[in-house]
Image (cartoon, rainbow, N blue to C red; front, side, top):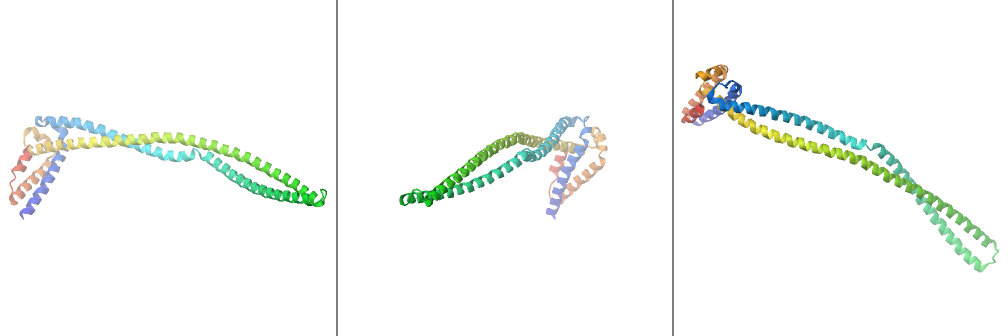
Length: 281
């Protein structure tokens, strides 16, 4: 039973401390004329102004951060869109280049076959020259075959050279497009980098101002509690009575809570001297 009453007393004391803060928060603006609370009052006047300024900065940083994040999303799409026309053009040229390269490889293979055929006919002609009359039909046919193969080889080589010129021209155009794509994307990346720096700065400002406001709020809570505790302890005093009358319901509840703490402490076998002293401090 003693432990239960001790637990009740501890819980009620926590509630009383919260009530003191609430009372102080509600009444602080009314205690300017109470000399004993002048330090708390004027500090709260200063802190309240600072708190509002920090809150405005935090709100502004939140708005900026939202705008920067939205702009970042737009930039990601713009990086792709900014070079879409060039990317499409590059894809078409690259496809043409691959087709021409395949055609060139076929021509090269055909030229190799013609060269092998030419080498074979040349060897045959050398043998026939050594074995036959210079005017034999086989010799004439072989000589005609060599001329035809030379003509065919030259045609294939000319086609290959023309393809090489076209392929080189396309490869040069591809390099130019790649450079233009990189230039456009580089411009977008520079803008994106600036946006990322803005996001970082906004986050830093937000964290810094939140930390400052949190520290300030802790100081203000302490002052609210001191004011609430004083009003509760001296609510019958003429200098405090007018302020206390505006919050009589809360004060009555706090007084009942104080009495309950006292009784629970007695039943727990404890003295309430510390609580009474803290209420009057």
